[in-house]
Length: 600
Image 1 (cartoon, rainbow, N blue to C red):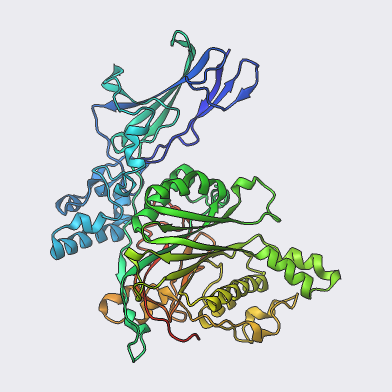
Image 2: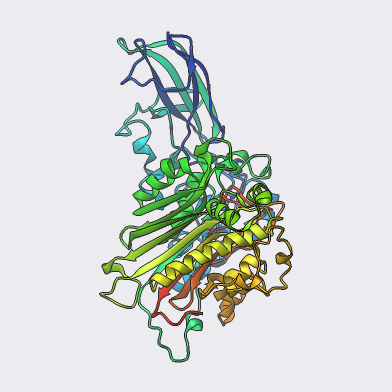
């Protein structure tokens, strides 16, 4: 007979909006064990599994700390109450917690006062991007998914028996009848109970022991301070003749989301295990990405199974169409589903897909080896050059009714390159060669069509490195120290390390703006390169690896997503954290298209 051997949850801490999926191990009638579900619609040997979820509600309401959401709050900031800041942000677990967070916390008060003075609508201004319910738990932008959990937790209508049982001031309410359950804002501060039992398919009566699990109290999904979009002085890109004329704009997001395969507890042991789990991170990442409302999304480190099963269907609900390029697997030997790659999404109402180019650097390495490396060194060369990295190049066409371009009636194209140059730091020659190979491919596209270009991604190259110099300056100084590492002579002659694309880093636009309002943003830039001080923050490394480059003869930066600083990261010493679910930060730029000028 069918029986349940074991039931447990991967994480005992449930978070609002993050699906709970219990691990249920079954012993089948043939004595084999399996984790496959046995629903009522497909009974096995006359039996099936019945699941139920309950919420326990006591007479005492529990508030949750806004800084440490797994801790119960013991004090509340009255300033937040007076400023009408969402109550969830006013709670703290200890006086030390409140004191440590004060530098960050007072920003809420300052912004609330500023927003009220400007337009009298402080909550929409402050929290519109990561909007909260009264519990600070649900993002309004996920109305199609997480916020509708009450309608999708196992039944078409949320009509469950009012109260199941009462004991010592506690009442159990049935909230779900499927194997999985997504906690809602109503669950915050309450314990959940999961029940699993074998049921006779004919009598509908339970058979054997009822297996139960109690969770800890449900916590709200931590919400970081919203990152605002800051306008920049786009006129810095105009020539004195002013021939560039503007029209509409579009936004582009680039984000290395940290693949689940790389997010190990050993590597990121400073991040709470529940905040490092993929069920939590995927919802937090989706909430953040959708909250920015980008027209084009370039993601790196997207596992193939996560693209198919999560990002593609979820972003489809928000009007996006996605394209994907998985890394090659000559080096990787694990589960092919966990191989990551690059994913590019675009809004269907603004763009249509014209063409897709896939760059496999392994193939380029094989061609290079065949053409230039002596036979005795080919194996050594391939071992050095083959790193499985890829780039995804997508050509889009602006739709007539939403063109961000200058020439109505003319077909308007845009080329978007998305890549992740994941190469060990000591292989400086390989990293530079891959970037150069990508740029040469983009030059060919530019030669065949007069088309604006964006080059986005995680290049694993800091400002001032040879790959960054090649991207930003169009060439590499022959005396650059990175060129000293070239055992295969693949970078010679150094005069070939050039390209003709007029690329400019979008975030360097902050340095070209003037006015007191921009000083705080300039302080978040490296004075030498005008790039962000960091886009990647771990215990072992803090620096900039991610960029959005654009062709300055055809695009102008209108605004940028503000950069994070140490205050924005609260007291976190590194990423990922409960608030930010990747070790990288997202970059977003708004562009205005203009008439093309001569190339560099």
